[in-house]
Figure 1 (cartoon, rainbow, N blue to C red):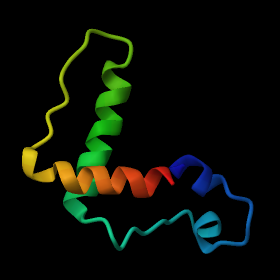
Figure 2: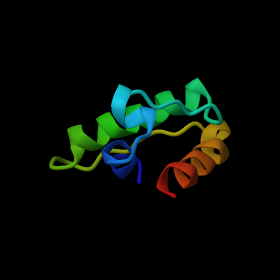
Figure 3: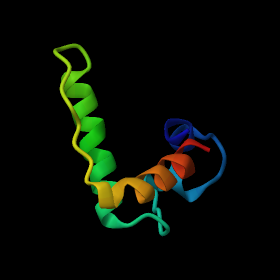
Figure 4: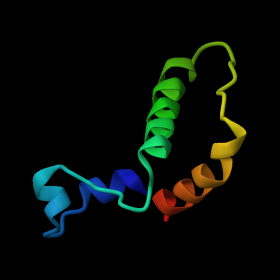
Length: 70
């Protein structure tokens, strides 16, 4: 997962520098992912709300989710 990627104890530059780049994921998709993380934290304990995803972003978001999960 993304969290374990950052915590990796190996000698990767990402764990030393604290910077991770995702060249295969567009800025628009990364922004939507960050918006979802924020939404998830804000509404995880409250009333259910809908997180809006533009239909044209759906495929790219699914591909990014798969990439970040594996």
